[in-house]
Image 1 (spheres, rainbow, N blue to C red):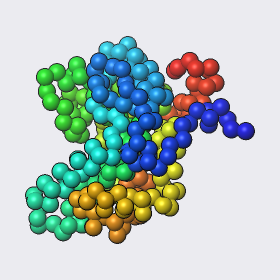
Image 2: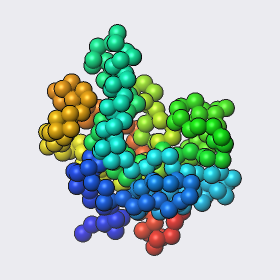
Image 3: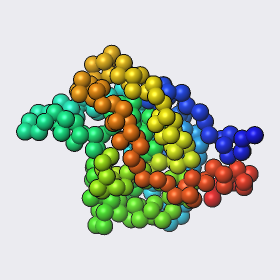
Length: 253
């Protein structure tokens, strides 16, 4: 028999994990996070974290939550077009690697899962434009105070940073990007274990004529392992969030 916390983990089909379908997400009814969608369990956890941050004088908002395949496709195509023009001295593969360091392939973005969100403090931002660049979250940046708070408290609500490794081969560190561990870890495992995923994505890329797809498809399996698999692990505290709320009969930390 499955543990109660196990039964709370929503199963997602491949089309949902790849952002082609969005029916696993709901809107985050928050005036500061407009047009943001996440999974229901993630919405609940974020709102609990938002309340805790407010008690410490911080405002918490989501710049980006669920992102579908088509939106990620648009981001990818723009990046490929501009980067290939700007970095003509690099080989095509080197240019693709530089894009993948910061932007996910459509179908392989964690934002497809409805578990991942880019967060910021709109009050600290003031009239500045949010760029989602590392300096904004470092000491002296307008998001530094929020980042320090999240590093200390986000695990209590199930969140962790998957992109932390400065010297890794995967995605570059993103201090704004937080992931809901109890769900995200399962979906990461599901994609890595899906032997049919490369052929599924190849078909989508060819059908949509994705920019650079002829360079990508030959090593798609390796790219999946590298950019989905090579992330920082969550803490046990973040992973146990669902078990904790089940044990306490729905009350939140």
